[in-house]
Length: 179
Length: 99
Image (cartoon, rainbow over all chains, first blue to last red):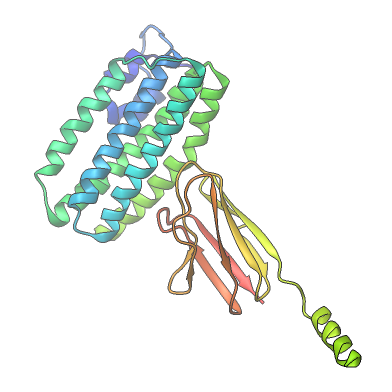
């Protein structure tokens, strides 16, 4: 089953999982195009890379600092691979309501995070990473993969999923250690 | 002299040649997860992911940073069982058994 972009955006970025699992009744289906999916992939990775940069710079716990560096490295690597793919496929990413909301929400969260320090910063960042990766995995499973038309694009998104799961498990373990 | 030459040849033949083993790093997993090797063998870690990894047995041995789509390696110097992980992705775990 495909879910509409309207339904996805309506619930907000971090409510994506719930929204994708239960789209609003009566919402007219408007499947995402590959160009829109590409823009969402770029935005989701760029947002987490930038948040990772902030954590790498400001976190007090060395493990949290390293996690931030890893997020910055990994999500930029995914975007580099995605960039090569869309160039080859001649797909121009099309900004859309969801990709824009991801960017806005990312900037808002980074501003909030920048006002914190020490253990409060570390906990807020890692708790956010747990929620963010859960939401993105749900989006991958329930929105991005089902909507992707091009086989290579679909396979690339499927290939990125293990990275997201690894990040989530790592963040969950860190969060348990921080509590 | 010829006698000692033959002894040397026989001695060399008796020593098993060091082998090369490959562990792939793909989809954030080591494969095979458990690997049995002999002292002197080389283990090549082939990173097929699009992100960097390491294979690190804390305070024992460490391949260091292995860039995406490249390889790193270690030589098994000492007998033992070594659990190892990726420093960047701690859920990636493997075990090296050196006999």
